[in-house]
Amino acid sequence: MKTHTVVMIPGDGIGPEVTTATRKVLEAAGAPVRFIERHAGIAALDRGTDDLLPAATVDAIRQHGVALKGPCTTPIGKGFSSINVALRKKLNLYAAVRPVRSLAGVKTRFQDVDLVIIRENTEGLYSGVENQITDGVIVSMKVATRVACHRLTHWGFRYATHRRRQKISLFHKANIMKMSDGLMLDEARKVHEHDYPNIEYEEVIIDAGMMKLVQDPTKFDIIMCENLYGDIISDLCAGLVGGLGVTPGANIGDEDAVFEAVHGSAPDIAGNNLANPLAMIMSATMMLNHIADRRQDLTCRQASERIKTAYNLALEDGQKTRDLGGELGTKEFTQAVIERL
Ligand code: NAI
Image (cartoon, rainbow, N blue to C red; front, side, top):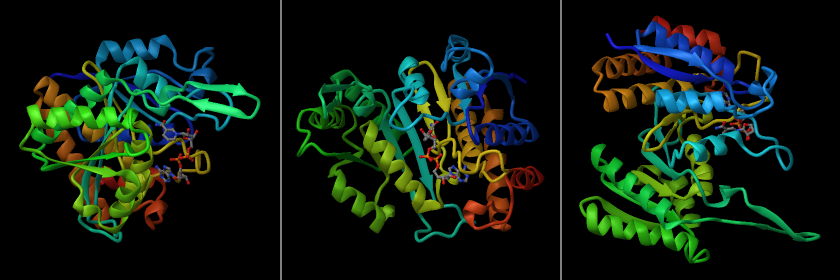
């Protein structure tokens, strides 16, 4: 049986807890992966490097093509820039994919949500270009390029086709940001018309779109958007299906892919066995499917399916962490999943 090398980045805060849990579940499921550990963020500084994103970490991902990453802390309003944003840019991981699905064992207002957010991951207001023009006047630059808008929208329509999804809703604010958001609309329209006319396509002004989402998320299939909107919509959608503890994600480029949960490093609960590891476990199942697709390895898909069945069974049996109204800690929930494999 072939074994795939995956770069494991534990990250900061709850990162080491949820990545350790995920590793245990993958091992117990017999997933054909071998982890090599590399570091990023404050965890990298703690290990004596003077670089928040060491070249050894980026090089390892380039070499092996796949990473599973815990969250990295970014200071608010001051300090260093986001390591997460830097990594996505460095590796050109231009498409963030975040499936949002209701889970049978997790009761929320809506029980049949099944949508996917596809977020542009390399530009927009995350260009990080901010200038003080004069005292008390700051300008933040929102960057949109035709190249990035084209590759994202093309990727999104192709994904929709492969996954047999019916409809793409492009969330935008091109009534105000006529040029930058307008460019994304322009590219999406062209890609839709020329290459994917069979996928239904609609344009939704984001403010009204957010209202429609909370009123009835089942009306949406794929939501595509630029970087900042995607960040905000992701957390809102997480709230529709049980919270940040149950929403996985992937950052995909033409060469490499980094899988990570939507949530951050949750410093308020870090180190206390309180984190829900499920979002990271789910991200790992996405990773296994990605390896299965790219390297035609059925055993990865089988391991992914076993893990999904096990965590669904655990939830249906009422085995839940506190964020979902249960009593279990990170380790106990992980054990409950392993017992059901
Ligand atoms: P957060 O996602 O870390 O936490 C928001 C709330 O959700 C907190 O109350 C937290 O306890 C809870 N939460 C998050 N994940 C959970 C889990 N797995 N189980 C149970 N509860 C969970 O967002 P916040 O507080 O805005 O950011 C904290 C730090 O994380 C910041 O430094 C931020 O920059 C960073 N961050 C990193 C990300 C990444 O590495 N991809 C993504 C988002 C934020």
